[in-house]
Length: 456
Image 1 (cartoon, rainbow, N blue to C red):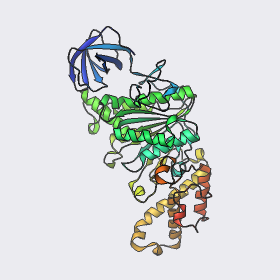
Image 2: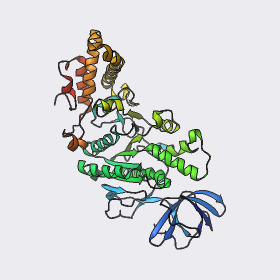
Image 3: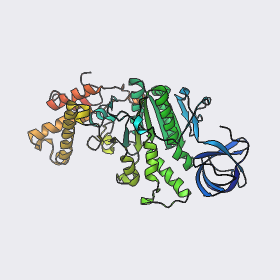
């Protein structure tokens, strides 16, 4: 990764993270360039060819200290990161350099962070669900193995805890590995996640890649690609089940919008970059299953002003196989995980994929919860006693189901004092059948809350 001794040009102008380089020849777009100053090194990425000898690049480091006339060196390759099985259990930055104070990764093999997806002929279509052991997810919006699921929710509703539980499920139950991409994460969030994953025992089977909020838009834009390069490496080399988690896709879009504006492109719909569709697709289309293994993605998505028709949200939605919406109303009732069972969907919830029994039970549970939601206002004004006997029975069973679909998690057992549980999907279906058929009508609602299977 050393720069050539011969400089290819010099800095002609610097406007924040945008650097214009006067060159003797034009390196290809996407090429990594180095500016060396003493012991420090700035990395630039070639982004535009302005003139036969003038290049515009985006800096991936803080640019304080850059000045006109500084020599620029060509790395001779696009931005790439060292890949090795020792990456598991590590916290890295966009360049694959350690953020955890441990030694650097071996540099025998590298992988470009920007690459094409596998050929269509090599991609396996998702045909299986990925059982997580989380009751409400597996029953009502099952994850697609080798597919992409979006996790929509605001602050404080449990996105990070849910993501960590997914990582725990994949590493402990499925012997898989996890890659976490922190896009524009606050330092506090990254620090807490690292310590919580250590305490939960998830870290040895995980890779954390962070591009923090205080870093340049070029870093925040590219860090998702770096994490994806590690996910692809683990899929291809370990033939393992890879869980790819990204928090937050909206910050990736925001960083792309900043870069686009810095490069002088005219904004498009609602001020977003004109390249929005292709940028999101370049990331999402690489999350695929091949003969070597599968990458299952869970992506947190911030929804601006709760508007699901926002162009960025709508673009991401077009790539997803499943949508899990976390509800503040659920969290306020103490229903954790705070999944909204009526708005969360998965294309795998089809009787031809999950089977007739699972599909029938899931639909019946959803109908009971929907009827309860319809009657909530009447119950609040007139009380439960004013309902017809049929509606009262549906409401009582729906309330028990709502509490049954809560679950204590392994990763927060130290905080809650309740041991985490993993419930097999077959057990969840059997229990829900019992609720629907009235076998648990004699139980108090509190007896259904925060437990695993009903037989335990």
